[in-house]
Image (cartoon, rainbow, N blue to C red; front, side, top):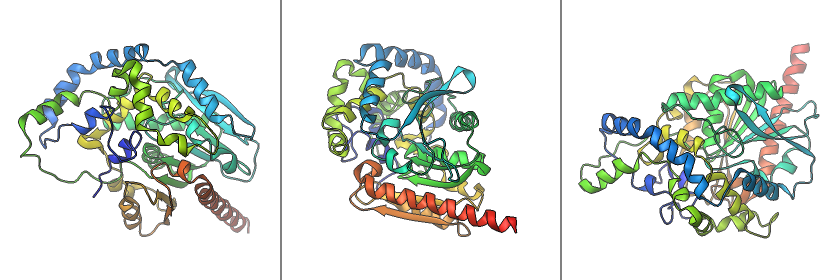
Length: 392
């Protein structure tokens, strides 16, 4: 059975394994059951130094915020709809980078798109025109990723999750969205659900696309592992998941091109060069703020420290959920079935897009867009019927 952590590794490898050390610390992570006390001491001691190193590394890499902006602009150049781009200010001097489409639309529930680990707004390039024809659509860079602010996050998993959730809520207040259909891919699916748990009145429907972080980590034993592997695991666990990308310095782009050469094909309908791969590099060669938060939210091998499935019982039963998977993804759809089983009194739909991998929205954009539009239209129809019934 393929583990949940392969959602992460698919950012870098078509086969689910990372080349040349891009995911070195994930692949070699310590798997001891008694991980806690000694690892906490190592993390605490290395925290300040690790942050300083992480902040310095981008200056050694062939990247900058300006180059990230340029590559994002290239990703979005095929979009024909009018849209605005702006930083939406939230507390702490932070801001959320936001693309806003069709903000004047009325009578339709706004759709909010949350990207996955290592992603950004540009990856929705093949979806934004279709999804925004009749409704407001917002695509945002999560706090700590893309062109949003990159603050320091709590080293505590619950604290880091709360920072993500509160940043989304503060963003919602600023843009003036009363309620939303929230769609999240990968890490975005986990955070969309965490947001719905905290602010259920604001969520009319959850759309989880290949979500990360739902199942609990299986109980395994590593008693037979060689001592040297365990030692390496202890040492490497203090690094962020994509540290190898930045440690490679000028060779970083080469590693990404080698690992994600398939991105050119994924976006071939809108791009005829390596812009998509270049964009992914610049997204992840910056100071790893959100990446570090993600690390703090995981346990060895990329499983969620606070898995979502056991918490779904706390989610308001009237919030419908759609779970979308790609038929060719290395991530099995057991999470979707588990979500459905955990909510017997709620509506949960599972959809599988044929011919799509983990990046469903890029692999089969037409089918993905059609499926999401069907979900959105159903939400609006149900709200209309409910409104008419209340008027009687």
